Image (tube, rainbow, N blue to C red; front, side):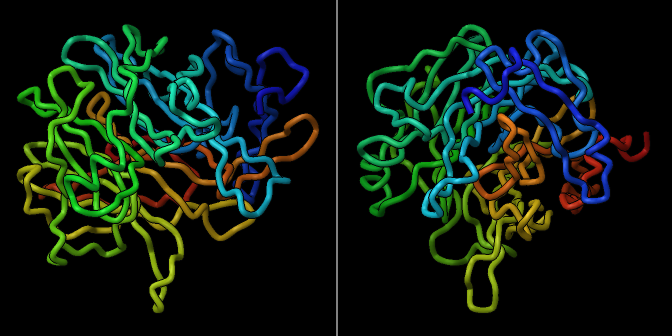
Length: 376
């Protein structure tokens, strides 16, 4: 998707398509490094998916001190004629911004997977960025290396970059995990969290998330690595924990949001949903996992198969970010349709009950933020 139309970094939004009965958004894409809209903000949607200039996945959002929200995501570039054995082709990470959750601005390419010296092309898996206590910005992302999937870290003085790789080796490797946990583990989907006392934590992984403290530099981990949930089977989840952890704290309670897998009666995978667990401490114990979404929709299939949560507080409102596969793009006169490997960012309001539990979010309703939040 490096060269998609003859336009010069422009994007044409066909807003009427958003309101068609099939709830499918149709747009013309152009994805140069300077972005589809140059320096001009754009009003997306106004329904989900809300990022419509390219196929995007695995969102993460953070709030900067100047009042700006930044949204980091990967770009799905799997063409319609790709071999069936190729599920994903994620070439690079992008960053968007907003100051009101209504008008969004494309900033720039954040990094490419091969910008890490050991990273292979098209392996820009899920990531997260955060403002450190030192005022610098830290980016954590998974790339494929010759040693398997690794978690990498880069640092910048501006949230938009440029980001520079820290050190010559990854932050987390397969060998580190197998040494500390005595078992192999996939090092994907890093989430970073800074607690009220300034302690930073990194969590990641499939099946059972790993967690460890980050050192004060934010670029080294403390050992040993441990599992977040107990391994003895005492912790349960309505839909099985699968991947995509996201740490969050509210009113003294810790939350672990994650992509959970719905399975059939034969325990075969159906598709991912979003679930969460709560605790009074990151050491646990954690409440059993509760599902808060259905599977995200797709154009030609029953669902997008994956989903990836991120949560953000902004101006006394909480938001849930994720992806579906409901976007269509015109790419050089060829229609690219949303699919498992061509996803699109979405956002909805997230509501809490008085006891801290979370209300169900209807991700199959495309309304998104087009309606005002409850009580407003």
